[in-house]
Length: 584
Image (cartoon, rainbow, N blue to C red; front, side, top):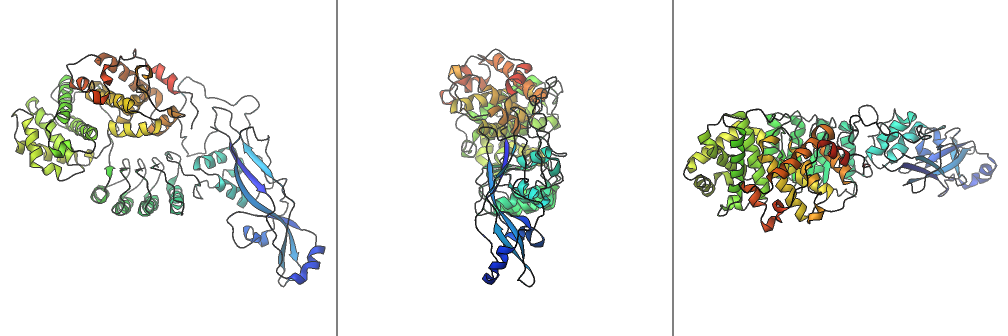
């Protein structure tokens, strides 16, 4: 975390004389009575900034903001200009007008510097957007002599303090100022639109007011060109959702929007759905964990042209929990066979022409896992259930695919006569009936693409990460891990094989970015999953009895199944490896 710096630059930029030139001699003889401050963006002349003509008794260029220490070398400075005037009443005007003269130039700098690796606590109700320290590891403290990093504000009017707070470009910097400065804690850090909206603004306590401020940012002429906007876990309700709907309606170029774990109800969902009906830029919408009813869900699915993720299973089953009348080993065989079906040749256009075959595969495996966890399926119907889930997944975002007679006939054919095309269509209908909105869930592959975009990837590392998540999803030992953990673990492990030709992009602070966007607990979820995945990778090496291992030996997938796995590491190694990097 770099220093958080704001500068109030008081310098003359002109005069604001009385309009009556005949009063000049009287003005010259009049001594200045007080000092005022003209803030940027305040119209109507210098007196518009303050009540009673702009006079602020006792305010001068030396006591605006008093730093405890001088700015450190290399400090990033946010500069805002304002004009300092001295003034006195114009005695010749009726009623008396205010006469302003330019004060001598002066500059006062307020600096907050965080020692490396340390940040102050955020205000009450604002969650930290960074991973917690590992258990047993003491929280980093500022070096001796810097523990009392605080602002001293002398004679600063509340209006100026609020405006100075609004000058800070991001919500995170404003929240940290409120935590540092006792005088600022009663002020609203979400009042003004952020000058520099960030892609990741989850879990910072935005509420409806913060969502409205963000919407104002996108309504400006200089519409931010960020590709993702993550506003999850912020207490946003229907009022905030209406503001976000305006953003979607305004022609923004956001490709992925996350509104997960908020308080949006059907009214907010319907407003977003109406906006999505004319929005062609958005590709994915996360809206699970809200207060949506069937009405709101149906509205979103009907109107949206993008992928809508309505639900996410939070409670995963333990590895030892029976999933159906068959065992975990049979589940692994079934999933590996489904992978072969999706990758095999001679598939109809409805399946082979899928824009992203890997996305289609993981949707199918997700449907199959959810269906098997809710129904006891006889062993002789497992193949039918698998191809039924495939047909249901094909029609999830393309209604005509599920009605394609060629696809249903081909899926019946790959079962070697175990079922008919009509059986496959009936199985797909049953899967859709049982799962309903649970079909609209993100998968490990969904999260993997997001995390790799944040942390950097190459074609080789992408193939390796895909291999690892496919191994994990097929294995029954990973059913208790959430898809976010599986994707994040594969992201980490895919960067461990540079010596074997698996390159990656060198993205600064990639570890901190990964931890921030996954919202996973490092000790209890991500590190154990990465350790289990490293052991699975080692145990599967050279096991050609599984199709997934043979598949990733193909040249077009960069033969990643042939690389020698690193020795398995325990969870403590990954905790140490991923900890300690400063936030971006």
